[in-house]
Image (cartoon, rainbow over all chains, first blue to last red; front, side):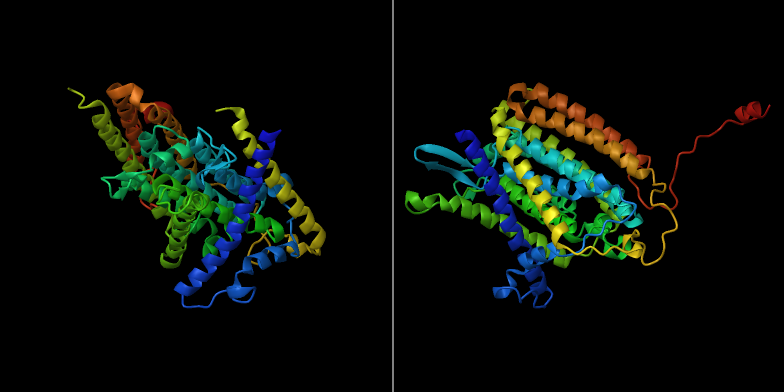
Length: 346
Length: 140
């Protein structure tokens, strides 16, 4: 029974954490973009407009939800729920802090410490394609269908690049458990530099770029290119069903930022000060600091770069990112081989 | 590592579906519903849609899907090897590099045949040259 209660606490905590994070994230994005564009941004709901997202969320309950006549009802209703579920579940394997000891038992601050953590992440981000394909196909309308076909080709292309960019990380850690990958990044390199996986720089860059494409963020937001295909796959969605897509999109942005921080920037590793009762807060702080820094980078890129052309997008993925990651895997494998087993002919 | 590790994930799945379901029902109760034929028509920039949306699609999307399947399976193999690399030594590295070279060859072939080119107006295609005798035979 206590196992059940512990699991329930973990699930509820991750759920609440993500909802609060999204409320903050949407506000931070709008405020930061408005600062970069020399505007004021939201400033009415609450101090500095911080409750704007909450107000928008409440509003969506009272908006008419239109279901056009020629939709496939089952898939049309399922699509936003699938989008939300895949986004929520990915965060379950991200450790947000060092293990804490309560009453002599050590608890890992992670939703579920799976030994197949990275495969789980890749599997769920593939599942996210279904939500977009179902939404576009079930809408029975031209623009959603075009948007979803584009989106699925884009997402699976960058999915391949993302998976390949993670192989060197697994080679380094010797495990696909994300907790193990973070633990392997503790300590320092040459006594000064933190031993983060960012030394795998090509992997880091490819992962981040694929992350932009996976979450359909600018400059890869062709999925919802307003000028060409209206709203893309969610053109026909309105009311709370649209809000679910919106929620899923922002949770996905936070997931990618958190995964980048955990896989390449050492996660919760960082200096710890003070007595034991306060020391456990520091790792959580480091994790949040790194994650939010990448979130701000996402917003900064959105405000700075124009949208890519579709043919450029596809050829960038297949002709640059994938060959580079393949070559990089071979290079890292040979380097680790020389370090661990000596030269092959010796 | 046991099945019980997946319990939080199962619970979050239930919680998320419950959240979405309750919210959708609540929205249905709270929101006004005033459908008109115009509102329920598919979005088409204000005009009446003339065609069914499911039209023919470029075959390129299918090619991308096939390439993705090849590379995604490769990723699974690479992950399996990467976890246990220390046990296989140089033999493992050599095997995996040979395997990857074969897949790089696949990519190079697709690249050369133009499967990765989009929006190319004059695509250089290798046309199958039909021998004149064959045409004559068919005609006869």
